Amino acid sequence: MTIIYKEGKSHTNSDGLSRWPLDNVKSNPAYDPEVEAKIPIHFMEIDRKKNFRFSEWAPQSGNTSSEGTETPILGISSSELRTKFFNAVMKTYDKHKQCSILLQLLQQTYRSLELKYQCEEPWLRDYKDNKFFLIDGLLYHREKHTSALTIIDREHISLILQECHDYPYMGHMSEDWTKERVASTAWWPKWEQELSEYINTSEIYKKENRKHGKRYGLLEHIEDPRHPWETINMDWVTGLVPGGKENFNS
Image (tube, rainbow, N blue to C red):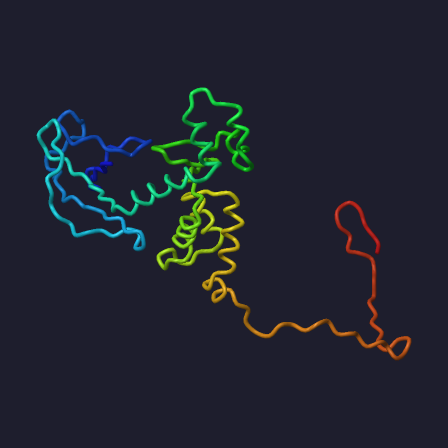
């Protein structure tokens, strides 16, 4: 993936949809010869537990455009953790009956009905709704406008729950926010129920949501009156103030 950076001064002629500026070349009506196009390249390292970590800025040689000027790029260097995780997930599919069946179905041009009905719920229901698809050997689950990686190994599920809830850089967000983050990251059967149980039993939840003060006691019995009327309250009720075309009496 290549990300091209443009300074704010040169980002004046972007289109309304993508906001992508035209190259600063002579064929561009907004061409400005004084704009400096060279900027240092920035490499971003992805660390699993520290989220994103940026290295020092260092000038590098960028791509050369047709005009002979150097085009700045943003190079992204991903660690091997991501690749190893995806490879580990793919290996678990072969050991799981439902995932193995789905992989065969999605790879076939003419899908076997006999193989299809070997699926169990909720896999079969979601397969009929076209919620499963393959990308580079990985099984993804589609839910409305979000697609997430399908995982079934307990170790991988625990890792996702920890990443999306426990680590300090997540900010110990609420259950709803954590649910949104998990939904965009991974999917497995009954994940919402498992996530709720995980949050409610976590040490962070117990510390941050403990009740302060003493518990309220049970309702007490009201003392029965000793006389027919111990206290008498009176209220004088009169006619209501005329309002509009009609008058009402109490």
